[in-house]
Image (cartoon, rainbow, N blue to C red; front, side, top):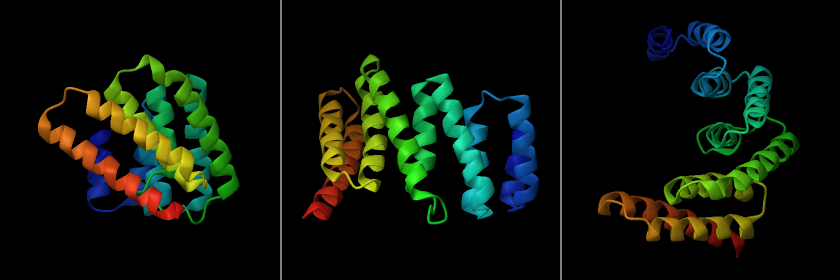
Length: 177
């Protein structure tokens, strides 16, 4: 099934890819990556905002029901990540759903290690920035910086993460003034 999806996406046959993904979701409903692919093809490739919103809403609801931080983060990425054009989606619904996802992630976050918390806070900061709460976004990025700084990571990885966070922080602070 994954080979069929990849083959179809390589030749940009979105209808075939979508059909294989939907078949996969029926067969493997717990495979979060299939839900993520589903949304990205509908919104990002086919520009079918109505079907994309329905798939995105279902993806987020499923993540909330599972209460798994990984699922919640992936759903939040699809709602507010920098990789899709959301101009055709209902802003108020995205903000409301994002808030619920963020609150759940933050409740689960303390049980995870610093690298996972760094990633969670960076993703949640995208939501707060998009929803207009730059102060909260800046606070989360600053906390993520502390997680990365205190973590024993290979120098290259630590440098890359710090650079990404500092660039995001500068962007968010620049938009505040």
